[in-house]
Image (tube, rainbow, N blue to C red):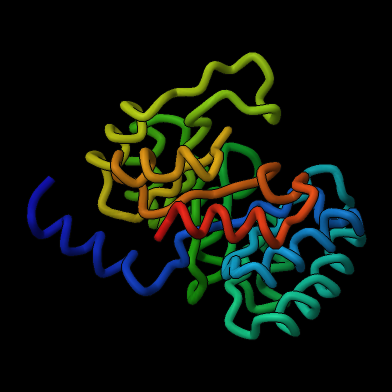
Length: 216
């Protein structure tokens, strides 16, 4: 990677994107929504709203409710929406896409002022998403995870390959614990994205702080 591209990466990542992303999966559930609020109390400053099972009405109403709750705790919290571009547009939020649903180009056209992310699973995925205009990438699964049963995880070498392939910030996702965060940073990740490690924790506030400690 050239010095110019590394400078671009630093400009896009440093100081602009929080380094811990909470994937609030099935946030339409009151239990998961409450955990997201508690995680923000613990210092999380980026919450990603995702629920592949919710219908449009449930997703929209739950989004509005949770956005209000999160911003009541931390007005500066960044919030992104998975695939539902209409919700992101109506609430003025960022958006995230992947292999299902709208493309990066479609998201960019619908939300010209938003940050658009993409879920990549290979270096080729990452390059294509960057070329299409993605502002950042979630790369997964790094380690074995309950959300992808039977998948061994791609490992840290694959994370290094993605870091070397693109200039946009890369976030490691999948099977991460607070103890594994430094290794992901050493492999080039700007930060990490966490789902069950926080949502399913007995104390989401303490769990969030543990991941943030690993990022410091």
